Length: 212
Image 1 (spheres, rainbow, N blue to C red):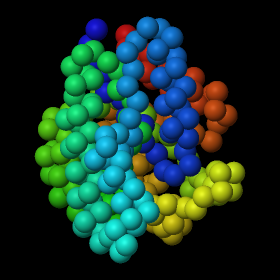
Image 2 (tube, helix red, strand yellow):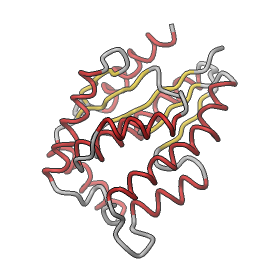
Image 3 (cartoon, rainbow, N blue to C red):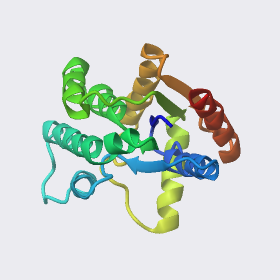
């Protein structure tokens, strides 16, 4: 079987991790080889970068330029060590965020030139792009409500991105919607405010088309 690369994108609190887990379970029940991973992270080096970015682990605030390049470094490692080998052996790779998140968070959110970011992406991914990107779309207010609820439940604090302003996250949400309009051949928008089971069925409907 041919390998597939599918990414999940969306604002904070959209439920990407939950939906990846449900989809992976369904695909494995069909006998498919499934690899789940995330950005930043997915490799030992990538997880170290994730901790550095999200929790200011260097003991200083990262400048936006350094933050962006760290995301690209994590991505390059993930592509070469996990994603490409898995696709080559025929696995389905499900990734929680990919280059589109950097385009949106650093481009739309922080105001960097999107064309410059796209050049960085091209270098980092080395030709490995998803065949399907599922955008779990959610209003900013609902996303923040879910984030607060999640962190209250586990007793930890907000990470670097979650601490950004409501205005920042509004730009992020609008950015994802803009990318979905710009690349309709790859993006599929799914309403993430629906119940978990309904979102999963919407996800499955899109994935089933790719599988067929």
